[in-house]
Length: 226
Image 1 (cartoon, rainbow, N blue to C red):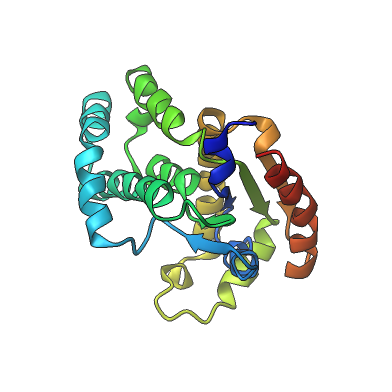
Image 2 (image 1 turned 90 degrees about the horizontal axis):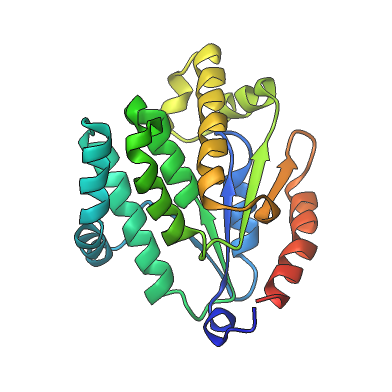
């Protein structure tokens, strides 16, 4: 990894896990470090979204062709994903660490969960290969967080967010959604990230401090290897 272009770019880490696994708390702590910044597919600047829409036209056409049926929310997520890639390449090049809380693995998993079943057919294989070619070189580490379903459910019930749509879910719906995301994460990671880049951390009995310490050594070693 002696390439000067790689040395100049930040370490990019995505936190992934079902709702209630502790992504937001860990992202907040990691991004509070000097030289770190937090990013997501949500709330991106409009100019980047516009540019992302133009650049993602081939991806959108390929998705429509491969599935024969794609809703606007799915297409919008692909556009946001393209805009996030532009953000990383254009505006965050000089930071030390980028913490993605709901980045490409999440966005593509969201598409798998809420998109058409045809996303898993052979017609979309080329589409997946291209997404992997776009993102695999940019993702240095993927941190997969999870906890048993009863703990996830309890955490979600204790959230204070007023606009949290999961507050109205039944326990069974929460468990089913978590299972769907776990399946989608596995599918997306097969395309996007080699196994040696994925770190799995159980969060059922781990504090945020312990998670930060567990990640610290691995991320430092990864950063030195840039």
